[in-house]
Length: 389
Ligand code: ATP
Ligand code: MG
Image (cartoon, rainbow, N blue to C red; front, side, top):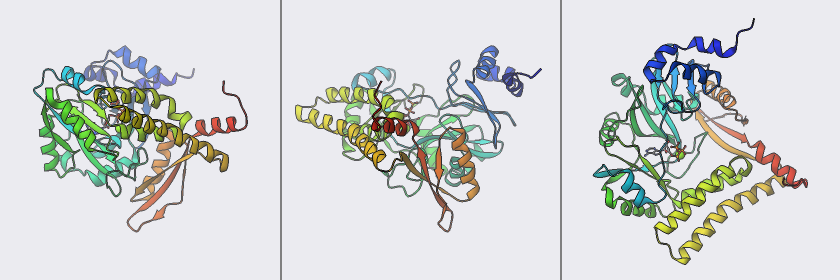
Protein backbone atom coordinates (compact mmCIF):
# COMPACT_ATOMS: atom_id res chain seq x y z
CA UNK A 1 0.00 0.00 0.00
CA UNK A 2 1.26 3.50 -0.85
CA UNK A 3 2.13 5.38 2.26
CA UNK A 4 0.58 8.73 2.94
CA UNK A 5 2.97 11.63 2.04
CA UNK A 6 2.53 13.30 5.40
CA UNK A 7 3.63 10.20 7.32
CA UNK A 8 6.84 10.15 5.29
CA UNK A 9 7.37 13.79 6.20
CA UNK A 10 6.58 13.15 9.86
CA UNK A 11 9.37 10.58 9.90
CA UNK A 12 11.89 13.15 8.68
CA UNK A 13 11.39 15.28 11.75
CA UNK A 14 12.47 14.44 15.30
CA UNK A 15 9.02 15.29 16.67
CA UNK A 16 9.96 14.64 20.30
CA UNK A 17 12.90 17.02 20.13
CA UNK A 18 10.92 19.75 18.37
CA UNK A 19 8.10 19.36 20.87
CA UNK A 20 10.48 19.79 23.76
CA UNK A 21 12.55 22.65 22.31
CA UNK A 22 9.61 24.71 21.07
CA UNK A 23 7.15 23.62 23.72
CA UNK A 24 4.50 22.43 21.27
CA UNK A 25 2.51 19.24 22.02
CA UNK A 26 3.59 16.41 19.70
CA UNK A 27 0.11 15.91 18.24
CA UNK A 28 0.01 19.56 17.19
CA UNK A 29 3.26 19.11 15.24
CA UNK A 30 2.05 16.01 13.40
CA UNK A 31 -1.33 17.67 12.83
CA UNK A 32 0.39 20.74 11.40
CA UNK A 33 2.38 18.58 8.97
CA UNK A 34 -0.82 16.84 7.85
CA UNK A 35 -2.57 20.17 7.33
CA UNK A 36 0.52 21.60 5.56
CA UNK A 37 0.83 24.37 8.12
CA UNK A 38 4.27 22.96 8.75
CA UNK A 39 5.75 22.50 5.29
CA UNK A 40 8.76 20.60 4.09
CA UNK A 41 11.12 22.49 1.78
CA UNK A 42 13.84 20.70 -0.12
CA UNK A 43 16.84 22.50 -1.56
CA UNK A 44 20.36 23.44 -0.60
CA UNK A 45 19.06 23.05 2.96
CA UNK A 46 16.33 20.56 3.83
CA UNK A 47 13.98 22.11 6.34
CA UNK A 48 10.46 22.57 7.62
CA UNK A 49 8.85 26.01 7.73
CA UNK A 50 5.84 27.23 9.68
CA UNK A 51 3.44 28.65 7.11
CA UNK A 52 1.19 29.91 9.92
CA UNK A 53 1.79 30.38 13.64
CA UNK A 54 1.21 27.34 15.87
CA UNK A 55 1.18 27.27 19.68
CA UNK A 56 2.91 30.64 19.99
CA UNK A 57 5.60 29.78 17.42
CA UNK A 58 5.74 32.51 14.79
CA UNK A 59 5.00 31.91 11.11
CA UNK A 60 8.29 31.81 9.19
CA UNK A 61 10.07 29.74 11.85
CA UNK A 62 12.45 27.24 10.21
CA UNK A 63 13.53 23.85 11.48
CA UNK A 64 16.60 22.65 9.60
CA UNK A 65 17.24 18.92 9.48
CA UNK A 66 20.90 18.14 8.76
CA UNK A 67 22.26 19.24 11.16
CA UNK A 68 19.26 20.02 13.32
CA UNK A 69 18.82 23.74 13.86
CA UNK A 70 16.00 26.19 14.53
CA UNK A 71 15.58 29.82 13.48
CA UNK A 72 12.54 31.45 15.02
CA UNK A 73 10.29 33.56 12.82
CA UNK A 74 10.25 37.34 13.08
CA UNK A 75 7.26 38.37 15.21
CA UNK A 76 4.48 40.58 13.91
CA UNK A 77 4.74 44.21 15.00
CA UNK A 78 1.43 45.73 16.08
CA UNK A 79 0.53 49.15 14.73
CA UNK A 80 -0.55 52.31 16.54
CA UNK A 81 -3.30 54.30 14.85
CA UNK A 82 -3.50 56.93 17.58
CA UNK A 83 0.02 57.71 18.76
CA UNK A 84 -0.58 59.29 22.14
CA UNK A 85 -2.98 56.82 23.76
CA UNK A 86 -1.37 53.74 22.19
CA UNK A 87 2.19 54.60 23.18
CA UNK A 88 1.14 55.60 26.69
CA UNK A 89 -0.86 52.40 27.21
CA UNK A 90 1.45 49.92 25.52
CA UNK A 91 4.65 51.24 27.14
CA UNK A 92 3.12 52.13 30.51
CA UNK A 93 5.75 50.07 32.38
CA UNK A 94 8.68 51.79 30.63
CA UNK A 95 10.18 55.15 31.48
CA UNK A 96 11.40 55.79 27.97
CA UNK A 97 10.97 54.44 24.48
CA UNK A 98 13.60 54.13 21.76
CA UNK A 99 12.51 55.31 18.33
CA UNK A 100 14.09 53.96 15.17
CA UNK A 101 13.29 54.47 11.51
CA UNK A 102 11.04 51.90 9.92
CA UNK A 103 12.83 51.20 6.67
CA UNK A 104 10.91 49.99 3.67
CA UNK A 105 12.43 46.93 2.11
CA UNK A 106 12.05 43.26 2.93
CA UNK A 107 12.58 41.48 6.21
CA UNK A 108 15.60 39.17 6.31
CA UNK A 109 17.07 36.95 8.98
CA UNK A 110 20.71 36.08 8.47
CA UNK A 111 21.90 33.02 10.37
CA UNK A 112 24.63 30.41 10.25
CA UNK A 113 23.13 27.12 9.08
CA UNK A 114 25.36 24.10 8.71
CA UNK A 115 28.35 26.43 8.77
CA UNK A 116 27.04 28.48 5.84
CA UNK A 117 25.29 31.85 5.86
CA UNK A 118 21.60 31.71 4.98
CA UNK A 119 19.37 34.66 4.06
CA UNK A 120 15.88 33.79 5.25
CA UNK A 121 12.85 35.83 4.13
CA UNK A 122 9.87 36.66 6.33
CA UNK A 123 7.86 33.62 5.34
CA UNK A 124 10.70 31.28 6.28
CA UNK A 125 12.27 30.54 2.91
CA UNK A 126 16.01 30.47 2.31
CA UNK A 127 16.27 32.84 -0.65
CA UNK A 128 19.30 32.21 -2.89
CA UNK A 129 19.58 35.86 -3.95
CA UNK A 130 19.29 37.13 -0.38
CA UNK A 131 21.86 34.55 0.71
CA UNK A 132 24.36 35.80 -1.91
CA UNK A 133 23.74 39.35 -0.67
CA UNK A 134 24.10 38.32 2.98
CA UNK A 135 27.49 36.74 2.24
CA UNK A 136 28.57 39.97 0.54
CA UNK A 137 27.03 42.53 2.92
CA UNK A 138 27.12 40.80 6.31
CA UNK A 139 29.94 38.27 6.10
CA UNK A 140 30.86 35.60 8.64
CA UNK A 141 32.75 37.60 11.23
CA UNK A 142 29.78 38.24 13.50
CA UNK A 143 28.76 34.59 13.42
CA UNK A 144 32.19 33.19 14.21
CA UNK A 145 31.72 34.67 17.69
CA UNK A 146 27.92 34.44 17.89
CA UNK A 147 26.83 31.28 16.07
CA UNK A 148 23.62 31.06 18.10
CA UNK A 149 22.34 34.50 17.20
CA UNK A 150 20.38 35.68 14.20
CA UNK A 151 20.69 39.12 12.61
CA UNK A 152 17.30 40.52 11.68
CA UNK A 153 17.23 43.42 9.31
CA UNK A 154 15.76 45.09 6.27
CA UNK A 155 17.21 44.53 2.78
CA UNK A 156 16.71 47.87 1.13
CA UNK A 157 17.42 49.40 -2.26
CA UNK A 158 16.61 49.30 -5.94
CA UNK A 159 18.10 45.84 -6.65
CA UNK A 160 15.40 44.14 -4.61
CA UNK A 161 13.23 41.49 -6.24
CA UNK A 162 10.54 41.84 -3.55
CA UNK A 163 10.28 45.50 -2.50
CA UNK A 164 12.38 47.70 -4.80
CA UNK A 165 12.76 51.25 -3.47
CA UNK A 166 14.93 54.12 -4.65
CA UNK A 167 14.15 56.48 -1.79
CA UNK A 168 17.26 56.00 0.36
CA UNK A 169 20.12 56.90 -1.94
CA UNK A 170 21.29 53.30 -2.01
CA UNK A 171 23.01 52.18 -5.18
CA UNK A 172 22.15 48.50 -5.15
CA UNK A 173 21.03 46.74 -1.98
CA UNK A 174 22.00 47.27 1.67
CA UNK A 175 21.24 45.40 4.87
CA UNK A 176 20.16 47.42 7.93
CA UNK A 177 20.07 45.56 11.25
CA UNK A 178 17.06 46.21 13.53
CA UNK A 179 17.23 43.21 15.84
CA UNK A 180 19.68 40.64 17.11
CA UNK A 181 17.87 37.63 18.48
CA UNK A 182 18.55 34.23 19.89
CA UNK A 183 18.10 31.70 17.08
CA UNK A 184 16.15 29.17 19.10
CA UNK A 185 14.10 31.31 21.49
CA UNK A 186 13.83 34.50 19.42
CA UNK A 187 14.75 36.53 22.51
CA UNK A 188 15.90 40.01 21.38
CA UNK A 189 18.83 42.06 22.65
CA UNK A 190 18.31 45.49 24.25
CA UNK A 191 18.32 48.28 21.66
CA UNK A 192 21.59 50.06 22.52
CA UNK A 193 23.53 46.85 23.09
CA UNK A 194 22.39 45.61 19.67
CA UNK A 195 23.42 48.86 18.01
CA UNK A 196 26.86 48.76 19.67
CA UNK A 197 27.51 45.16 18.66
CA UNK A 198 26.41 45.90 15.10
CA UNK A 199 28.83 48.85 15.00
CA UNK A 200 31.62 46.65 16.32
CA UNK A 201 31.24 44.31 13.37
CA UNK A 202 30.84 47.13 10.85
CA UNK A 203 27.18 46.27 10.24
CA UNK A 204 24.76 49.08 9.41
CA UNK A 205 21.82 49.69 11.72
CA UNK A 206 18.52 51.36 10.97
CA UNK A 207 18.49 55.07 11.84
CA UNK A 208 18.09 55.87 15.55
CA UNK A 209 16.09 59.01 16.34
CA UNK A 210 16.39 59.02 20.11
CA UNK A 211 15.06 57.84 23.44
CA UNK A 212 12.04 59.80 24.63
CA UNK A 213 9.95 59.86 27.76
CA UNK A 214 6.85 57.80 27.17
CA UNK A 215 4.47 60.66 27.88
CA UNK A 216 6.15 62.98 25.35
CA UNK A 217 7.05 60.42 22.71
CA UNK A 218 3.99 61.08 20.56
CA UNK A 219 5.01 64.74 20.05
CA UNK A 220 8.55 63.72 19.08
CA UNK A 221 7.28 61.03 16.73
CA UNK A 222 4.76 63.35 15.09
CA UNK A 223 7.65 65.76 14.45
CA UNK A 224 9.80 62.99 12.99
CA UNK A 225 7.01 61.91 10.66
CA UNK A 226 6.23 65.50 9.63
CA UNK A 227 9.96 66.05 9.19
CA UNK A 228 9.97 63.38 6.49
CA UNK A 229 7.93 65.92 4.48
CA UNK A 230 7.09 64.64 1.05
CA UNK A 231 9.86 62.04 1.03
CA UNK A 232 8.70 58.46 1.19
CA UNK A 233 10.37 57.35 4.43
CA UNK A 234 7.95 54.79 5.78
CA UNK A 235 7.69 55.67 9.45
CA UNK A 236 9.06 54.62 12.83
CA UNK A 237 9.22 51.61 15.10
CA UNK A 238 8.83 52.45 18.78
CA UNK A 239 10.66 50.10 21.13
CA UNK A 240 11.07 49.28 24.80
CA UNK A 241 14.83 49.99 25.18
CA UNK A 242 15.19 46.63 26.99
CA UNK A 243 13.12 44.86 24.31
CA UNK A 244 10.97 43.13 26.92
CA UNK A 245 7.72 44.57 25.55
CA UNK A 246 7.01 44.07 21.86
CA UNK A 247 7.63 47.08 19.56
CA UNK A 248 4.92 49.15 17.90
CA UNK A 249 4.97 50.64 14.40
CA UNK A 250 3.60 53.92 13.06
CA UNK A 251 3.73 55.06 9.45
CA UNK A 252 3.44 58.23 7.39
CA UNK A 253 0.63 59.20 5.06
CA UNK A 254 3.08 59.61 2.17
CA UNK A 255 4.23 56.02 2.42
CA UNK A 256 0.65 54.88 2.90
CA UNK A 257 -0.19 56.50 -0.42
CA UNK A 258 2.88 55.03 -2.09
CA UNK A 259 1.68 51.56 -1.01
CA UNK A 260 -1.75 52.31 -2.45
CA UNK A 261 -0.31 53.45 -5.77
CA UNK A 262 1.45 50.12 -5.98
CA UNK A 263 -1.52 48.06 -4.81
CA UNK A 264 -3.97 49.67 -7.22
CA UNK A 265 -1.68 49.29 -10.22
CA UNK A 266 -2.31 45.57 -9.58
CA UNK A 267 -5.75 46.22 -8.17
CA UNK A 268 -7.26 42.78 -8.43
CA UNK A 269 -4.21 41.15 -6.85
CA UNK A 270 -3.65 43.57 -3.93
CA UNK A 271 -6.26 46.35 -3.90
CA UNK A 272 -8.78 44.86 -1.50
CA UNK A 273 -6.27 43.91 1.24
CA UNK A 274 -4.44 47.22 1.08
CA UNK A 275 -7.41 49.51 1.00
CA UNK A 276 -9.41 49.41 4.23
CA UNK A 277 -6.58 49.43 6.79
CA UNK A 278 -5.08 52.47 5.07
CA UNK A 279 -8.35 54.38 5.05
CA UNK A 280 -8.47 53.86 8.83
CA UNK A 281 -4.87 54.99 9.36
CA UNK A 282 -5.45 58.20 7.41
CA UNK A 283 -8.66 59.04 9.24
CA UNK A 284 -7.18 58.57 12.73
CA UNK A 285 -4.03 60.48 11.86
CA UNK A 286 -6.07 63.38 10.59
CA UNK A 287 -8.03 63.51 13.85
CA UNK A 288 -5.02 63.06 16.14
CA UNK A 289 -3.12 65.82 14.34
CA UNK A 290 -6.15 68.06 14.50
CA UNK A 291 -6.08 68.86 10.82
CA UNK A 292 -7.97 71.89 9.49
CA UNK A 293 -10.29 71.73 6.52
CA UNK A 294 -7.56 72.51 4.04
CA UNK A 295 -5.34 69.78 5.49
CA UNK A 296 -8.17 67.27 5.32
CA UNK A 297 -8.93 68.15 1.70
CA UNK A 298 -5.27 67.76 0.78
CA UNK A 299 -5.19 64.35 2.49
CA UNK A 300 -8.33 63.26 0.59
CA UNK A 301 -6.90 64.38 -2.72
CA UNK A 302 -3.61 62.57 -2.12
CA UNK A 303 -5.39 59.42 -1.00
CA UNK A 304 -7.88 59.39 -3.86
CA UNK A 305 -5.22 60.02 -6.47
CA UNK A 306 -3.13 57.18 -5.07
CA UNK A 307 -5.98 54.78 -5.71
CA UNK A 308 -7.48 55.90 -8.98
CA UNK A 309 -4.56 57.17 -11.04
CA UNK A 310 -2.56 53.89 -11.02
CA UNK A 311 -5.70 51.90 -11.72
CA UNK A 312 -6.63 54.10 -14.69
CA UNK A 313 -3.07 53.68 -15.95
CA UNK A 314 -3.35 49.90 -15.67
CA UNK A 315 -6.65 49.78 -17.59
CA UNK A 316 -5.19 51.99 -20.35
CA UNK A 317 -2.12 49.83 -20.52
CA UNK A 318 -4.17 46.67 -20.84
CA UNK A 319 -6.14 48.31 -23.63
CA UNK A 320 -2.99 49.27 -25.49
CA UNK A 321 -0.48 46.43 -25.17
CA UNK A 322 -2.05 43.92 -22.88
CA UNK A 323 0.76 43.23 -20.43
CA UNK A 324 0.29 43.85 -16.72
CA UNK A 325 3.68 43.24 -15.16
CA UNK A 326 5.95 44.65 -12.52
CA UNK A 327 9.59 44.92 -13.48
CA UNK A 328 12.20 44.41 -10.78
CA UNK A 329 15.90 43.72 -11.04
CA UNK A 330 18.53 41.72 -9.26
CA UNK A 331 22.29 42.18 -9.37
CA UNK A 332 24.15 38.89 -9.00
CA UNK A 333 27.81 37.91 -8.92
CA UNK A 334 27.25 34.67 -10.75
CA UNK A 335 24.61 33.23 -13.00
CA UNK A 336 24.04 30.21 -10.78
CA UNK A 337 22.40 32.53 -8.24
CA UNK A 338 20.08 33.81 -10.96
CA UNK A 339 19.09 30.26 -11.92
CA UNK A 340 18.51 29.32 -8.30
CA UNK A 341 16.44 32.46 -7.86
CA UNK A 342 14.33 31.51 -10.88
CA UNK A 343 13.56 28.17 -9.18
CA UNK A 344 12.90 30.01 -5.93
CA UNK A 345 10.27 32.29 -7.49
CA UNK A 346 8.63 29.23 -8.99
CA UNK A 347 8.52 27.65 -5.52
CA UNK A 348 6.82 30.81 -4.25
CA UNK A 349 4.25 30.56 -7.05
CA UNK A 350 5.38 33.79 -8.73
CA UNK A 351 5.08 33.74 -12.52
CA UNK A 352 7.98 35.77 -13.89
CA UNK A 353 9.97 36.26 -17.07
CA UNK A 354 13.73 36.75 -16.76
CA UNK A 355 15.48 38.93 -19.37
CA UNK A 356 18.91 38.06 -20.72
CA UNK A 357 21.47 38.98 -18.03
CA UNK A 358 23.44 42.14 -18.68
CA UNK A 359 27.16 41.75 -17.91
CA UNK A 360 28.45 44.60 -15.73
CA UNK A 361 32.04 43.39 -15.49
CA UNK A 362 31.84 42.29 -11.86
CA UNK A 363 28.51 40.54 -12.19
CA UNK A 364 25.17 40.72 -13.93
CA UNK A 365 22.00 42.77 -13.79
CA UNK A 366 18.91 40.73 -14.55
CA UNK A 367 15.53 42.33 -15.17
CA UNK A 368 12.56 40.28 -14.04
CA UNK A 369 8.97 40.85 -15.17
CA UNK A 370 6.45 39.56 -12.65
CA UNK A 371 3.06 38.77 -14.17
CA UNK A 372 -0.14 39.79 -12.43
CA UNK A 373 -2.67 37.37 -13.86
CA UNK A 374 -5.63 38.27 -11.68
CA UNK A 375 -5.47 42.00 -12.51
CA UNK A 376 -4.70 41.27 -16.13
CA UNK A 377 -7.55 38.79 -16.65
CA UNK A 378 -10.10 40.87 -14.76
CA UNK A 379 -9.24 44.02 -16.72
CA UNK A 380 -9.36 42.18 -20.00
CA UNK A 381 -12.75 40.63 -19.32
CA UNK A 382 -14.28 43.95 -18.26
CA UNK A 383 -12.83 45.69 -21.32
CA UNK A 384 -14.48 42.97 -23.43
CA UNK A 385 -17.81 43.84 -21.85
CA UNK A 386 -18.15 41.23 -19.14
CA UNK A 387 -20.39 42.30 -16.29
CA UNK A 388 -19.16 42.78 -12.71
CA UNK A 389 -20.89 40.19 -10.59
P1 ATP B 1 3.86 42.59 10.47
O1 ATP B 1 3.84 41.15 10.14
O2 ATP B 1 4.81 42.94 11.55
O3 ATP B 1 2.50 43.24 10.61
P2 ATP B 1 4.15 43.53 7.76
O4 ATP B 1 4.59 42.43 6.87
O5 ATP B 1 2.80 44.07 7.64
O6 ATP B 1 4.56 43.23 9.25
P3 ATP B 1 5.43 46.05 7.95
O7 ATP B 1 4.18 46.84 8.05
O8 ATP B 1 6.46 46.49 6.99
O9 ATP B 1 5.26 44.58 7.59
O10 ATP B 1 6.04 46.15 9.45
C1 ATP B 1 6.90 45.31 10.11
C2 ATP B 1 8.25 45.19 9.41
O11 ATP B 1 8.99 46.41 9.43
C3 ATP B 1 9.20 44.23 10.09
O12 ATP B 1 8.90 42.91 9.79
C4 ATP B 1 10.54 44.67 9.52
O13 ATP B 1 10.82 43.95 8.34
C5 ATP B 1 10.34 46.10 9.13
N1 ATP B 1 11.21 47.07 9.81
C6 ATP B 1 11.80 48.12 9.18
N2 ATP B 1 12.50 48.87 10.02
C7 ATP B 1 12.37 48.29 11.25
C8 ATP B 1 12.87 48.62 12.54
N3 ATP B 1 13.61 49.70 12.76
N4 ATP B 1 12.54 47.80 13.56
C9 ATP B 1 11.76 46.71 13.36
N5 ATP B 1 11.26 46.36 12.17
C10 ATP B 1 11.55 47.13 11.11
MG1 MG C 1 7.70 46.43 5.33
